[in-house]
Image 1 (cartoon, rainbow, N blue to C red):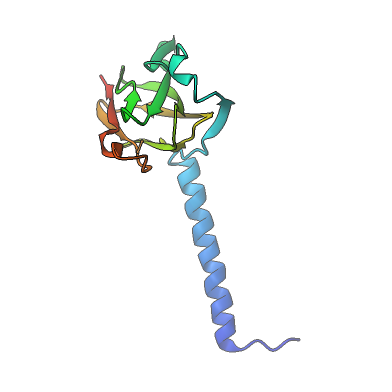
Image 2 (image 1 turned 135 degrees about the horizontal axis):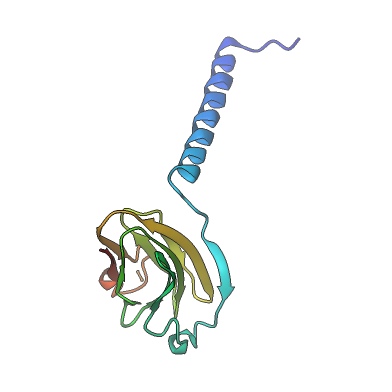
Length: 158
Ligand code: CUA
């Protein structure tokens, strides 16, 4: 049998324990916190996305009572989200489709599991359930130019 130094045994034990703790943390956040890997749902031409009927001003569609899809476009110059305000009733499930008309942006909605990079040319898809009434601000969290700090909006749940 190989002789393993006692300190080395401790380190092996400690690193194994850390792997178990990290693995558990990932599992808990994925299944209990609803963390999703944003799905690249489709490709879209960033040069023409501003003319796309769903993404031009952004849009919200009701699929069924309590079930919505929101189309969100991020744009640098004039550094805005389209739309800047999304209003849904309490207990709605909203699937977001987000894309960019130019550079890389971010999209994070406070108090939800939505946190994604917005890439030009790609439509990313994520779903959130809004079971608390109130305002949920969203921001661009990826530096995208001199107007970056002006990119924000909110989801209003009534
Ligand atoms: Cu868009 Cu920062």
